[in-house]
Image 1 (tube, rainbow, N blue to C red):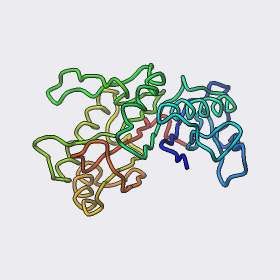
Image 2 (image 1 turned 30 degrees about the vertical axis):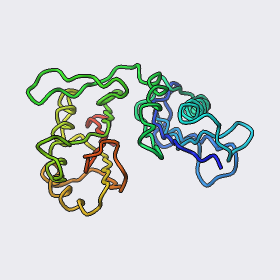
Image 3 (image 1 turned 135 degrees about the vertical axis):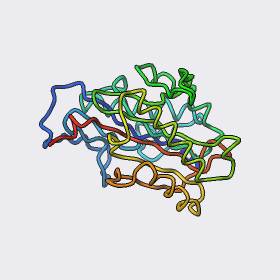
Length: 246
């Protein structure tokens, strides 16, 4: 059986007239499922995960390997966004799940077409401009919202130390926030990925040094990381106070 290798979830800015913050538009899935293909709320569109299924069969995966599957997923995401009044050009945050980390570069060869937009690059620790990643942005700012990519802290100095890697990842995230004119008080959501949940305590100890109270919403997930020596990866979303006010 040809099994799925890749799934993506996406958040985009709506291109239509802004809706009331209390109203929402639901884009249904092609076949009955207990979730929606997308939900548009205000000026944001939240798109569910997509698989590379064939147009005439909601369960069969397109043949041809990871690149064919990535193209098919992008087609499905594009069609869903169009129904919600948006497009891939407005994508602000994307999550990609791979069955095999060895498919990372092949997937990115197709994915690069999505990433040509204004971005923020993490500065170096000494304050010099950072080097842009060829396949992802350190962060994307949309209005007063900032979507930060997952960041690692694995270096020669932090090898094997989850607490040290957490501190380094947070330091990189902090520099990215500052480069965009944000700070830790603007962070509203985070996702932490841990290959080994025995490092959960060490991660949290370092995490609390940055967020001692009024913690952002957060999920911690056991998942393999693309970097072989990575013990923790952290992804954040920040919102300036002007948009947070009720």
